[in-house]
Length: 276
Length: 316
Image (cartoon, rainbow over all chains, first blue to last red; front, side, top):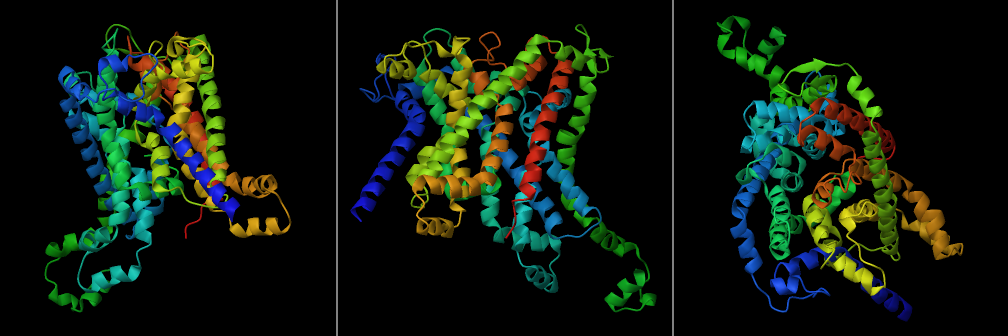
């Protein structure tokens, strides 16, 4: 018994140690963002700020259109989430409930899109979106990501678990597919739809390559791109305190999303192996 | 068909005077499925399926340097690539990057997962938070955080290294070290993801195997060697494929940390595509040829996974 207790304590210490080690770069970034410049550039590095200040956050917002980056990212990400979730609900319903010729083939066509790496399509997409005059616009940031095969697949799997009798009962009560879907099936699938929303949000918010190429005007950049240029533009004596403040702001929404949906997220990843 | 409809409606055919108002009602059920699919299918067609074709066309053309004229060159772009030492360098960098990140990343994750399984337990909220947070931040932010750690003058990394008596470096501008520096940041970012999958695999193993082994007097190492690892092979296989694909396509952290440099020490295939297509004079033909080659490799690897997965995934 004693040995078990000792092992348990050891394991807990080990786990906390590993956890801290993994979280350390973020902890350091967080602490740095509250330091005065003399603390930031102290050698040997000072782990805790000698004095906690908010100046870095003020600098980040004053030196760059940080507020604008945040708004851009929120508009881009929420549009992508709404489109992907809505489109996926409709398509998943077709694949899970409706019957029509070609359903199987179309399902494999949709799934097949998961196999195609983004690198293969981003150059033609760039040419197409630019020709439409959508470079440096919100639609330009959004349109390539309206459809989500992953979302369709995930919701279809969930819709398949809903008993058929429910649909039959709704039919008897005179509800057509449209009403059954939105008034019964969607409310029943809140959990799955919520999880999909979080996945879609993380994916959209963290996007890098597409926003990098489709925007070249400062005030259309998303926050990820904005931070990178903020860091790059300060040649010598970079203001690392402000850069870290910006990074903390940029990662805050993803952390919140993670905290809200920890369980589903971890379970979803363990089950599907798809990253957010 | 019409008789059935009439029969179902319970009315004799003669009372139906005009079909007009009900035509939509008859057509609608036949096309309803397609209408529900339309948004997704249109979006995927325009931004994934069509570009797969357009990309191929691009790869067979060269854009004349002045003006926008396309010149058909057949497979010349591909031939040029394979004769180009810079292209072979980006293949080498990609290969080394995958080799540097994947085995180490999986090994560390499996090690932790196994440690957590004696006795079997789940990660508590706090542990999960600490280990998993790097996964939900973007690769760009991960890059920024490590840029700071690797700072040659006041960075933590050089300080830690000096504590054990080693000499600090300007890691990101060193031809010798830059790739390792990017690899380390990548392993860090993906660790939590690998742990979650490995842990799910370990937890899936039925306890009765261990109980039986204990009765037979197997020690801890024997149990890991002869029960955990063999039963974990599907998970390991899955991790391997997912990680290989993911790291073949690494871009954000490379762009933030080194911009493919110094020289071309960290220019992998994706970075090379990005560079040729969007930096300086765009060479989208040759970039598309590279994209095609990379995509074929990625698709081949994911096909292997698809085949393997079919044998292992079953829906309850």
